[in-house]
Figure 1 (tube, rainbow, N blue to C red):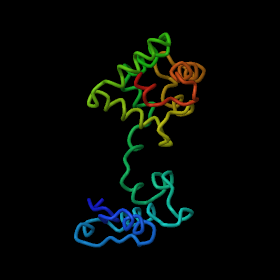
Figure 2 (cartoon, rainbow, N blue to C red):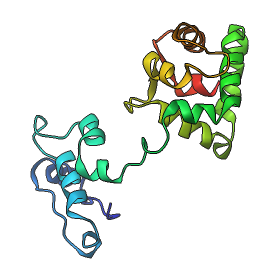
Figure 3 (tube, helix red, strand yellow):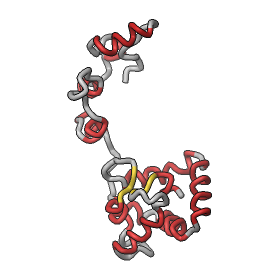
Figure 4 (cartoon, one colour):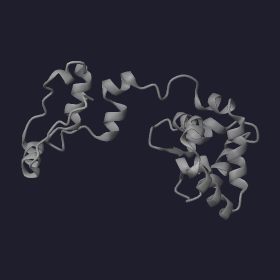
Length: 179
């Protein structure tokens, strides 16, 4: 947050000792502009005792500094957002109907698409991924898709979900969503 490493030394052994033994300090003018909540966040993530250290999941979902700053799941709900992007609904349905070889080709194309072109899709994916797991569950997918054109009910949503879930993991990964 400050642009400074919490533990730095030219000697690797000394640096390792500092990481293991020295307390985390927020000294210097670089830390003056950092809020107490942000410093607490850093302290909890760098706790020396693993059982007391803040887990990544708790950091993202429970720490006040992140919760206060996050705007990921604000605004319209996923179903309304999806209804504004009917071309995505059409693309997902087309992907679901595609042969396996074509699905792989579409994933390769999606992977090589410039970031600025997929930003809106990323935002939609994040909106649908309500639990911030990095994947879309069948429940999250159904909430966003049921009632969209061509997806009148949960059975249709589940069928579409299973067709898009190329690796049959039970979750739609980002690359599958882009496919």
